[in-house]
Amino acid sequence: MSRTLLVTGAAGFIGANFCHYWAARHPGDRLVAYDLLTYAGNAASLKALLDRGQLTLLRADIGDAEAFGRAMADHDVHWVVNFAAESHVDRSIRDPGAFVRTNVLGTHVLLDVVRGLWGASPGAERRFHHVSTDEVYGTLGPDDPPFSESTAYAPNSPYAASKAAADHLVRAYGRTYGVPFTLSNCSNNYGPYQFPEKLIPLCIVNILSGRPLPVYGDGRQVRDWLHVTDHCRAIEAILTRATTGTSYNVGGGAELRNLEVIEALCRRIDAAFLTTPSLGERFPSAPAARGEVSASLIEFVRDRPGHDRRYAVDGRLLERDLGVTADYTFERGLAQTVQWYLDNEPWWRAVMDGSYQDWIERQYGTTAP
Image (cartoon, rainbow, N blue to C red; front, side):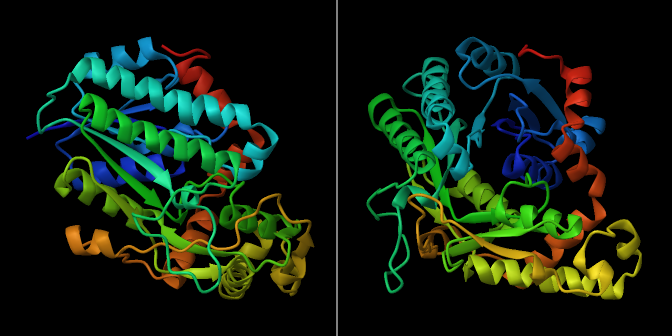
């Protein structure tokens, strides 16, 4: 049966990867990308799908109930996959209000519209899947067991608190109004199309540009790293096989200190310059272009306020129920990610200088439809 998926935040990092993944795996389904196209929502990430007619892009705000309701009705949506979120912790510290508006109030609008359209008995073909983060659980000590689905919420940043509130709303709408939902909490994602404010793409771009690699505090904060393709596979399994009302943690099984990740990136890029001499001509400001090591750019900076020390995700429930485990090792995933950024310089150059916004305005205008 052909289905229509409305993907909010579809032009963002994980949303765009999900759209590419789903279009390749389920070519008979229809994809509706719903995105406000803010700084982190790059429509160019979806251009190949748009050019092939595999996706319809709507520029609109998840906080706009009228626009969302019209999109749902016009396209007879079966599944909503909600990636839309403000997600950068540093930005949430500077402007927590923006995170409350998008992550909490925006999610409420989506749920309220879905509730009104689908009613109390939507049928097995309807589903609202909400994508969340392991940061809602707070922080772990060095010897604590990983977060499980029964771990109590204890968010420590405005971003994490806003996502925790959204998770609670999703569950409440399921219990109170019968909205058919599933929910997933993922660990740190990395891979293609990630905006260069997050650790891995920021470091790649900074190394190639010869700029410092800022390391918060002592760099010993531990994160579990999940390749975005493995995340997409997990969501696919949850959508197609999970029972309504269930929640799953999605991890990559790769706990690493931030400093270890940065040092691995430095070694990977240094090796790439040795095997591909033309990189020195393309990126003359990179240390490797001068025969120096990229690690020379590392600079320790003052730690972020309330910085969580360790995240780790227990993915055994997802494996037991749906047979899903991470396919990418961190080494393999990092190699693929570095190569993607080397091969797609025009994409990240346009993202960083804002020039892709000109294309967006020409294609989709300056206001929501």
